[in-house]
Length: 122
Image 1: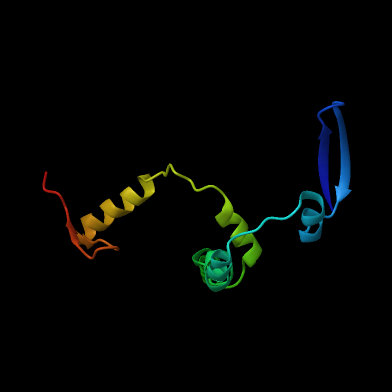
Image 2: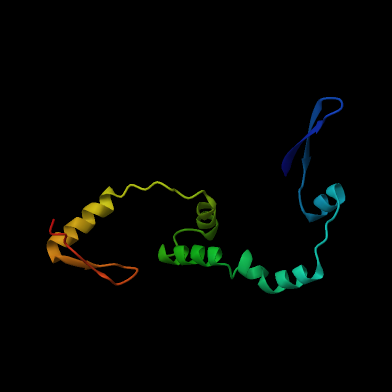
């Protein structure tokens, strides 16, 4: 059940109702909408790639579950993926690891491009 708060703007009264919010509830309480037939056809073909089991998002969640040895439930992974991304990152650990590798090997390789990186002589 979902609690819904309704506010009557004319009388300034608040009321809380418990209602099951599903397709039938939304249509019977808020009406309908329509889209052009061409959009419907496109969603029929592409819908699973946008939000279904073929989406990149869902495939990444499946990959993460498998990488965890199936210790994580798909629901938890999907929930974590929906959280806002962290835009600031602490690069000190990565930088330290990179510098250690450079001291050991004197050269490394970029994981994305394959370009060799060398110890800067300056």
